[in-house]
Image 1 (cartoon, rainbow, N blue to C red):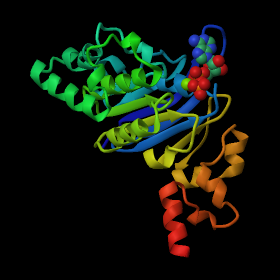
Image 2: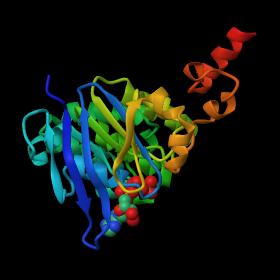
Image 3: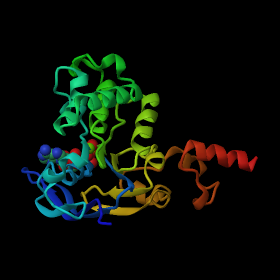
Image 4: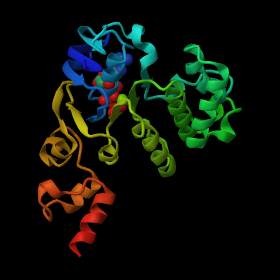
Length: 265
Ligand SMILES: Nc1ncnc2c1ncn2[C@@H]1O[C@H](COP(=O)(O)OP(=O)(O)OP(=O)(O)O)[C@@H](O)[C@H]1O
Ligand SMILES: [Mg+2]
Protein backbone atom coordinates (compact mmCIF):
# COMPACT_ATOMS: atom_id res chain seq x y z
CA UNK A 1 0.00 0.00 0.00
CA UNK A 2 1.26 3.48 -0.83
CA UNK A 3 2.57 5.55 2.06
CA UNK A 4 0.13 8.01 3.57
CA UNK A 5 2.75 10.74 3.46
CA UNK A 6 5.96 10.76 1.48
CA UNK A 7 8.17 13.85 1.67
CA UNK A 8 11.23 14.17 -0.51
CA UNK A 9 13.85 16.89 -0.12
CA UNK A 10 11.39 19.07 1.74
CA UNK A 11 12.90 22.48 2.49
CA UNK A 12 11.28 25.66 3.70
CA UNK A 13 12.87 29.06 3.86
CA UNK A 14 10.84 31.90 5.39
CA UNK A 15 10.84 35.24 3.56
CA UNK A 16 13.36 36.67 6.07
CA UNK A 17 15.89 34.03 4.98
CA UNK A 18 15.46 31.59 7.90
CA UNK A 19 15.72 28.04 6.63
CA UNK A 20 13.42 26.24 9.07
CA UNK A 21 13.45 22.77 7.52
CA UNK A 22 16.17 21.38 5.36
CA UNK A 23 16.06 18.55 2.84
CA UNK A 24 13.64 16.37 4.82
CA UNK A 25 12.91 12.87 3.55
CA UNK A 26 10.11 11.23 5.46
CA UNK A 27 7.85 8.31 4.64
CA UNK A 28 4.92 7.50 6.90
CA UNK A 29 2.89 4.36 6.30
CA UNK A 30 -0.77 3.87 7.04
CA UNK A 31 -1.44 3.26 10.73
CA UNK A 32 2.00 4.38 11.92
CA UNK A 33 2.24 6.51 15.04
CA UNK A 34 5.21 8.83 14.76
CA UNK A 35 6.51 11.42 17.22
CA UNK A 36 8.43 14.26 15.59
CA UNK A 37 10.66 15.66 18.33
CA UNK A 38 13.21 18.44 18.50
CA UNK A 39 14.32 21.48 20.47
CA UNK A 40 12.49 24.81 20.33
CA UNK A 41 13.08 26.41 16.96
CA UNK A 42 14.29 23.18 15.33
CA UNK A 43 11.54 23.32 12.72
CA UNK A 44 8.82 20.93 13.95
CA UNK A 45 5.93 23.33 13.38
CA UNK A 46 7.26 24.34 9.99
CA UNK A 47 7.58 20.68 9.06
CA UNK A 48 3.99 20.14 10.20
CA UNK A 49 2.80 23.04 8.05
CA UNK A 50 4.75 21.78 5.05
CA UNK A 51 3.49 18.20 5.47
CA UNK A 52 -0.04 19.48 5.95
CA UNK A 53 0.22 21.58 2.79
CA UNK A 54 -0.23 24.84 4.70
CA UNK A 55 3.04 26.36 3.58
CA UNK A 56 4.52 25.97 0.15
CA UNK A 57 7.95 24.33 0.47
CA UNK A 58 10.75 26.25 -1.20
CA UNK A 59 12.11 22.92 -2.43
CA UNK A 60 10.93 19.32 -2.47
CA UNK A 61 7.43 17.94 -2.37
CA UNK A 62 4.98 15.80 -0.42
CA UNK A 63 2.94 13.01 -1.96
CA UNK A 64 -0.28 12.03 -0.19
CA UNK A 65 -1.65 8.49 -0.27
CA UNK A 66 0.51 7.79 -3.32
CA UNK A 67 -2.01 9.84 -5.28
CA UNK A 68 -1.30 13.53 -5.37
CA UNK A 69 0.99 16.34 -4.24
CA UNK A 70 -1.93 18.71 -3.91
CA UNK A 71 -2.85 18.90 -0.22
CA UNK A 72 -6.11 20.67 -1.06
CA UNK A 73 -7.26 17.59 -2.94
CA UNK A 74 -6.93 15.54 0.27
CA UNK A 75 -7.75 18.28 2.79
CA UNK A 76 -10.65 16.30 4.28
CA UNK A 77 -8.33 13.35 4.99
CA UNK A 78 -5.74 15.37 6.95
CA UNK A 79 -6.42 16.58 10.48
CA UNK A 80 -3.93 19.36 11.12
CA UNK A 81 -3.85 20.79 14.64
CA UNK A 82 -1.66 23.89 14.71
CA UNK A 83 0.40 24.81 17.76
CA UNK A 84 -1.80 27.79 18.63
CA UNK A 85 -5.43 26.78 19.35
CA UNK A 86 -6.58 30.32 18.57
CA UNK A 87 -5.99 29.47 14.91
CA UNK A 88 -9.01 27.12 14.98
CA UNK A 89 -11.54 28.79 17.14
CA UNK A 90 -13.28 31.52 15.21
CA UNK A 91 -17.00 30.77 15.46
CA UNK A 92 -19.46 32.25 17.94
CA UNK A 93 -19.61 29.15 20.13
CA UNK A 94 -17.40 26.18 20.87
CA UNK A 95 -20.09 23.89 19.44
CA UNK A 96 -20.04 25.68 16.09
CA UNK A 97 -16.26 25.42 16.01
CA UNK A 98 -16.35 21.68 16.57
CA UNK A 99 -19.21 21.21 14.07
CA UNK A 100 -17.42 23.26 11.45
CA UNK A 101 -15.30 20.39 10.01
CA UNK A 102 -18.16 17.89 9.64
CA UNK A 103 -20.37 20.65 8.20
CA UNK A 104 -17.70 21.55 5.60
CA UNK A 105 -17.64 17.89 4.59
CA UNK A 106 -21.38 17.95 4.15
CA UNK A 107 -22.10 15.45 6.90
CA UNK A 108 -25.73 15.36 7.99
CA UNK A 109 -26.41 17.72 10.87
CA UNK A 110 -27.65 14.97 13.16
CA UNK A 111 -24.54 12.82 12.63
CA UNK A 112 -22.33 15.85 13.27
CA UNK A 113 -24.24 16.72 16.40
CA UNK A 114 -23.92 13.22 17.81
CA UNK A 115 -20.21 13.20 17.08
CA UNK A 116 -19.73 16.60 18.72
CA UNK A 117 -21.61 15.45 21.82
CA UNK A 118 -19.49 12.30 22.05
CA UNK A 119 -16.26 14.30 21.68
CA UNK A 120 -17.44 16.89 24.17
CA UNK A 121 -18.06 14.14 26.71
CA UNK A 122 -14.66 12.58 25.98
CA UNK A 123 -12.77 15.84 26.32
CA UNK A 124 -14.80 17.40 29.12
CA UNK A 125 -16.30 20.16 26.97
CA UNK A 126 -20.00 19.63 27.75
CA UNK A 127 -20.35 22.75 29.85
CA UNK A 128 -18.35 24.85 27.41
CA UNK A 129 -20.21 24.14 24.18
CA UNK A 130 -22.34 27.27 24.24
CA UNK A 131 -19.55 29.59 25.29
CA UNK A 132 -17.60 31.86 22.95
CA UNK A 133 -14.25 30.15 22.34
CA UNK A 134 -12.22 33.28 23.04
CA UNK A 135 -13.50 33.23 26.64
CA UNK A 136 -12.03 29.81 27.40
CA UNK A 137 -8.88 29.14 29.40
CA UNK A 138 -5.72 28.05 27.55
CA UNK A 139 -6.19 24.36 28.32
CA UNK A 140 -9.92 24.48 27.51
CA UNK A 141 -9.15 26.11 24.16
CA UNK A 142 -6.62 23.43 23.40
CA UNK A 143 -9.15 20.69 24.19
CA UNK A 144 -11.75 22.39 22.00
CA UNK A 145 -9.21 22.66 19.17
CA UNK A 146 -8.36 18.95 19.46
CA UNK A 147 -12.10 18.16 19.37
CA UNK A 148 -12.55 20.28 16.24
CA UNK A 149 -9.85 18.29 14.45
CA UNK A 150 -11.13 14.90 15.62
CA UNK A 151 -14.70 15.85 14.71
CA UNK A 152 -14.36 15.04 11.02
CA UNK A 153 -12.44 11.81 11.75
CA UNK A 154 -9.49 12.38 9.41
CA UNK A 155 -7.35 9.45 8.26
CA UNK A 156 -4.14 11.24 9.23
CA UNK A 157 -3.64 13.39 12.29
CA UNK A 158 -0.81 15.93 12.38
CA UNK A 159 -0.92 17.34 15.91
CA UNK A 160 1.46 20.06 17.02
CA UNK A 161 1.96 19.89 20.80
CA UNK A 162 -1.69 19.13 21.63
CA UNK A 163 -0.82 18.80 25.35
CA UNK A 164 0.87 22.15 25.88
CA UNK A 165 -1.59 23.71 28.33
CA UNK A 166 -3.67 20.64 29.18
CA UNK A 167 -3.87 19.14 32.69
CA UNK A 168 -3.03 15.51 33.52
CA UNK A 169 -6.56 14.16 33.34
CA UNK A 170 -7.28 15.53 29.89
CA UNK A 171 -3.82 14.66 28.61
CA UNK A 172 -4.79 11.08 29.25
CA UNK A 173 -8.12 11.57 27.48
CA UNK A 174 -6.48 13.19 24.45
CA UNK A 175 -3.85 10.48 24.33
CA UNK A 176 -6.55 7.82 24.36
CA UNK A 177 -8.66 9.62 21.78
CA UNK A 178 -5.80 9.85 19.29
CA UNK A 179 -4.28 6.42 19.85
CA UNK A 180 -7.50 4.38 20.04
CA UNK A 181 -8.24 4.97 16.38
CA UNK A 182 -7.14 3.23 13.20
CA UNK A 183 -5.62 6.26 11.52
CA UNK A 184 -2.07 7.49 11.14
CA UNK A 185 -0.62 9.86 13.71
CA UNK A 186 2.17 12.43 13.58
CA UNK A 187 2.70 14.07 16.97
CA UNK A 188 5.05 17.06 17.08
CA UNK A 189 6.55 17.85 20.49
CA UNK A 190 9.67 19.18 22.24
CA UNK A 191 8.86 17.09 25.34
CA UNK A 192 9.64 13.38 25.39
CA UNK A 193 7.88 12.12 28.51
CA UNK A 194 4.60 11.21 26.80
CA UNK A 195 6.18 10.00 23.56
CA UNK A 196 6.42 6.27 24.45
CA UNK A 197 2.71 6.22 25.24
CA UNK A 198 1.79 7.88 22.00
CA UNK A 199 4.19 6.71 19.31
CA UNK A 200 6.16 3.71 18.19
CA UNK A 201 8.58 5.61 15.98
CA UNK A 202 10.53 8.81 16.65
CA UNK A 203 11.83 11.31 14.11
CA UNK A 204 14.37 13.68 15.64
CA UNK A 205 14.74 17.11 14.06
CA UNK A 206 18.11 18.79 14.56
CA UNK A 207 18.52 22.48 15.28
CA UNK A 208 19.17 23.27 11.64
CA UNK A 209 15.90 21.70 10.53
CA UNK A 210 17.24 18.46 9.07
CA UNK A 211 16.35 14.97 10.28
CA UNK A 212 19.02 13.78 12.73
CA UNK A 213 17.55 10.36 13.49
CA UNK A 214 14.54 8.25 12.64
CA UNK A 215 13.87 4.94 14.40
CA UNK A 216 11.99 2.94 17.00
CA UNK A 217 11.05 4.79 20.18
CA UNK A 218 13.40 2.76 22.39
CA UNK A 219 16.40 3.23 20.13
CA UNK A 220 16.08 7.02 20.06
CA UNK A 221 14.79 7.74 23.58
CA UNK A 222 17.51 5.74 25.32
CA UNK A 223 20.32 7.45 23.39
CA UNK A 224 21.28 10.13 25.88
CA UNK A 225 24.14 11.52 23.78
CA UNK A 226 22.07 11.84 20.64
CA UNK A 227 19.28 13.56 22.56
CA UNK A 228 21.61 15.89 24.44
CA UNK A 229 23.31 16.91 21.20
CA UNK A 230 19.89 18.03 19.98
CA UNK A 231 18.79 19.89 23.09
CA UNK A 232 16.60 17.11 24.52
CA UNK A 233 16.83 14.56 27.30
CA UNK A 234 15.41 11.09 27.81
CA UNK A 235 12.07 10.57 29.57
CA UNK A 236 12.26 10.65 33.40
CA UNK A 237 12.04 6.86 33.84
CA UNK A 238 14.97 6.33 31.47
CA UNK A 239 17.06 8.87 33.39
CA UNK A 240 16.14 7.21 36.67
CA UNK A 241 17.03 3.67 35.62
CA UNK A 242 20.05 4.52 33.48
CA UNK A 243 23.17 2.69 34.67
CA UNK A 244 21.03 0.37 36.79
CA UNK A 245 19.33 -1.53 33.99
CA UNK A 246 20.62 -2.67 30.61
CA UNK A 247 19.53 -0.44 27.77
CA UNK A 248 17.09 -2.91 26.18
CA UNK A 249 15.22 -3.14 29.48
CA UNK A 250 15.12 0.55 30.41
CA UNK A 251 11.51 1.35 31.28
CA UNK A 252 10.15 4.06 28.98
CA UNK A 253 7.01 4.76 30.99
CA UNK A 254 6.02 4.90 34.66
CA UNK A 255 3.87 1.82 34.10
CA UNK A 256 6.85 -0.09 32.67
CA UNK A 257 9.04 1.08 35.56
CA UNK A 258 6.50 -0.20 38.06
CA UNK A 259 6.31 -3.56 36.29
CA UNK A 260 10.11 -3.76 36.31
CA UNK A 261 10.35 -3.06 40.03
CA UNK A 262 7.63 -5.56 40.88
CA UNK A 263 9.36 -8.25 38.86
CA UNK A 264 12.68 -7.52 40.54
CA UNK A 265 11.32 -7.64 44.08
N1 LIG B 1 6.97 33.11 10.18
C1 LIG B 1 8.30 32.94 10.37
N2 LIG B 1 9.18 33.77 9.79
C2 LIG B 1 10.51 33.62 9.95
N3 LIG B 1 11.06 32.65 10.71
C3 LIG B 1 10.21 31.80 11.32
C4 LIG B 1 8.80 31.90 11.21
N4 LIG B 1 8.23 30.93 11.94
C5 LIG B 1 9.25 30.25 12.49
N5 LIG B 1 10.45 30.76 12.12
C6 LIG B 1 11.79 30.28 12.48
O1 LIG B 1 11.94 28.98 11.89
C7 LIG B 1 12.63 28.12 12.79
C8 LIG B 1 11.75 26.91 13.08
O2 LIG B 1 10.60 27.36 13.76
P1 LIG B 1 9.44 26.35 14.17
O3 LIG B 1 8.32 27.15 14.68
O4 LIG B 1 9.18 25.45 13.03
O5 LIG B 1 10.17 25.52 15.34
P2 LIG B 1 9.58 24.46 16.38
O6 LIG B 1 10.49 23.29 16.33
O7 LIG B 1 8.15 24.22 16.10
O8 LIG B 1 9.75 25.20 17.78
P3 LIG B 1 8.86 25.11 19.14
O9 LIG B 1 9.33 23.86 19.88
O10 LIG B 1 9.24 26.32 19.88
O11 LIG B 1 7.43 25.05 18.77
C9 LIG B 1 12.99 28.95 14.01
O12 LIG B 1 14.29 29.43 13.83
C10 LIG B 1 11.98 30.08 13.96
O13 LIG B 1 12.50 31.25 14.58
MG1 LIG C 1 6.46 24.50 17.20
